[in-house]
Picture 1 (cartoon, rainbow, N blue to C red):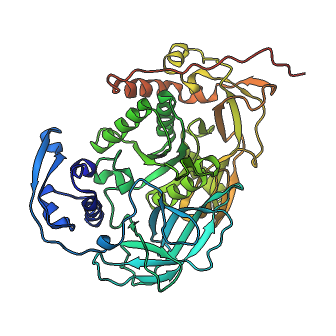
Picture 2: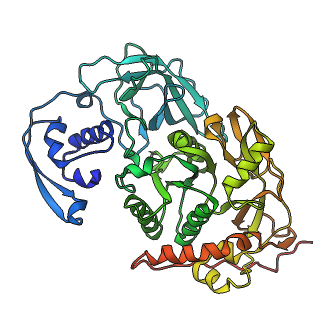
Picture 3: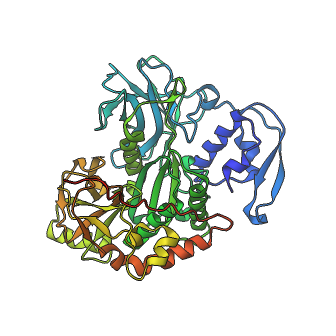
Length: 493
């Protein structure tokens, strides 16, 4: 049952307690349980909900009058799902996106945005192990770490709180204060796969409840900070190429997308939830905090923080992880897929924790459809099928690379490198693996070469996938954004 639909007509003060019940009961919620869940005031109301067993017909369920049960969330506001929340009562602004349970190190990790270079003299986590109002929180000194990024007013950060309770005791909520005598002005749900193994509160708009979505996969691909994305066929091609390369899950962070892209992603999520799709597509909201009617200043829409969130949210459900953009493809040139490449390289260098693909650019201003794929390249606006002219230059391993990593060994992952981990990075020879970046030219005067290696390897399998997926998009127009032809008047002398 879709929790958002079920709680549509409930008072705001009640909705958050329903969410807590969903988390504590592994995503399961039955409308008949509502009277025992709701802990606000005594009331009787009508709740509109969606029942998949009746084919999506709206029904009305009578919610019985209930006695008030005093809970912690009656006193402390609960951090809202799908938002960055400002932590009230601190000496400097700190926004929290989520509080993730890190089981391997027994700590709570708060995915955060803070004022760059500001140092809290003391910052304590207050951990709550019960939802009862009169319970006492456990105060733990936190560790605040700014993630590697550019100079700006705000920066990405992690706030970590080590849990010293017994092994099977995981906190339900966490708050932040600067004194051990202070009480938090708000709390956050501690998200954990042990307790929350069939629904993620941040994904309610896209993911329908299904135990299948929590299986461990070989490869999870994280695509941070989609901003102004309006090319649905590009997104479709990205997802289908990732499937062919070996991805079992793709996680996208949505800052802003248009209606067609939204419809496409919802279709993938629904198909997966109903057992008709093998690729798990997850879309997490990524609306940055607003101050004085403007989005706060932080580089690349907090891309670094999205990477950190994705790694710690899904590392236990992924053997390997990849962090890249919509227009990038990590291509194994001697192997059928990523699995074959990593297996062979691990034998050569067993201490490796990351496999680095050097970058070359395939220029979007030089349309050059591959022979035999001209019509499909035009119909789908496909970069893989339609762009075969690229730079002769391959960047060094220190410029614009992307990686496959073993997340179990990583402490901090960067955009282009591993900042902290236990092992070495294997820089792949360019005839073993290469990052193909389909984009506008970085330098219009770089010598060009014809390169059909990607389309030769994947074209015949990609085309039927594109046709199949788009056939499911009923009443959604296929808008192809044409590539702009190179301006030959530019002088390179």
